[in-house]
Amino acid sequence: MKAIVVGSGAGGATAARELATNGFEVVILEAGKPFTTLTHKISWLSSLRGSWLVGDENSIKRFYPHYQVTRCSGDLAIFTGITEGGSTSISCGNMVRAENGLKEIGLDLSPEFEEIEQTLTIMPIPREKWRPLTQQMFDHAISLGFEPKPTPKIDDVKKCVGCGYCELGCTTGAKWDSRRIYSGLLGKGVMLQTGARVQKVVFEDERATGVLVSHGSSVERVNADIVVLSAGGVGTAQILRASDLSPMDNLWVDVVLTVGGVMKGARMLNEPPMAWFIKRENYILSPYFDLLSFWFHKPWKDVPAEDRVGMMIKLADAENGCVRADGTVTKSLTSSDLESLEKAKFEAKQIMEASGVNGPFVDGMIHGGHLGGTVPLTKEDIDTMHPSWLPEDLWVADLSLMPRSQGLPTMLTASALALRVARKIIQIKSKR
Ligand SMILES: Cc1cc2nc3c(=O)[nH]c(=O)nc-3n(C[C@H](O)[C@H](O)[C@H](O)COP(=O)(O)OP(=O)(O)OC[C@H]3O[C@@H](n4cnc5c(N)ncnc54)[C@H](O)[C@@H]3O)c2cc1C
Image (cartoon, rainbow, N blue to C red; front, side, top):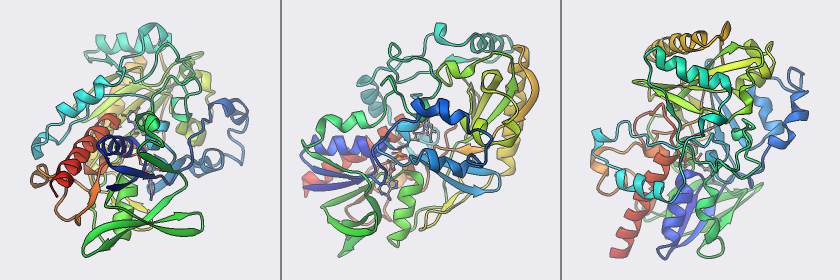
């Protein structure tokens, strides 16, 4: 039995492996190119900062085509990894269970979380590898009554050189990404095509029987017994719309805003990002050098990298975004999002000030990169993991299924959802 899996990120890689190890012949169609790191080029690129070559966030494409930037509204941009490994290739390597909204729909992913966690080495970056300021901010956060915790990371700590550029790719191989999930199966049940952008799903007798995929300017039809969409919260919704189906206007992105401060010689880029985090009701706070703000956000321009300090707010935002067939996205912050951000900004500043960080405290660029919610599971779907409005043999296995925003890292959740979906496919197909 042949399965097409669209996308090689957290969801696609997990679904592909599970299907391939259970007798399916799997073809992964990945829009992006093979992943390459930018980290080794960063020193000469740094000399271009502030020049006309580096304007707004859209100039990223010129240097790093793996990042896709979509402006959703005046105040919000979204970022996603369009490359082999998807957004996991450009992640910070944080690995936690994000479960907001699952209880309400009666979905317990604990078995999948446990199983996936057992196959990985997840541990925090030891305190001695944190910069002195990061250690001080951790201690001051405790004195202020917060409960910071070292962030679980999926890194080989021994290989990590603390370059701070996890999101531009890891040159030492310390950081995990989803390519590792299927790499051992390539040519043994899994075939991977990169540069293969799926445009739409093809149906016959109301069943999915394949996809139309473009390779540059040529379009090819690929047939299969089942089609699994794992193109991420935006990519999957875009393909569904182009296939005359209606994903929900329920996109969430986990809004990120990094409050910037200044301390001479802080050198936050000489440690892995987000070494610890504080979990608040609907957001987290975490020390973070926001590369996007440093490069593209005018209010951050005047402070050199070695003196810039950042405290990230990652907020579980309102699920109100809409994805169109051409990939454009409409989403803006609600008054409740803005209220939560104000509260979080106050706390971020409080921790930084207590640790000797100076102002001016400036907001970073507002962006999001955890894209979900466009094919939200409901209570009725849990038994089959197949939303009833999806035609037969068309499945979704990525973060699109997660109904609620998280304000937490989401790779593990995308993988756990995909694992559950893949097992349902195997169960259902073996009965037919
Ligand atoms: C900068 C950044 C840092 C992050 N850091 C962390 C972190 O530290 N920890 C964490 O847990 N989470 C992190 N995340 C979030 C996490 O990476 C994602 O939530 C997770 O990877 C989502 O999995 P997914 O399978 O839904 O989508 P993705 O992993 O994004 O995979 C989607 C795949 O589909 C492909 N695709 C899209 N459209 C098409 C198409 N039409 N045809 C074919 N292929 C297509 C894409 O190229 C991509 O490979 C980060 C995200 C970003 C952007």
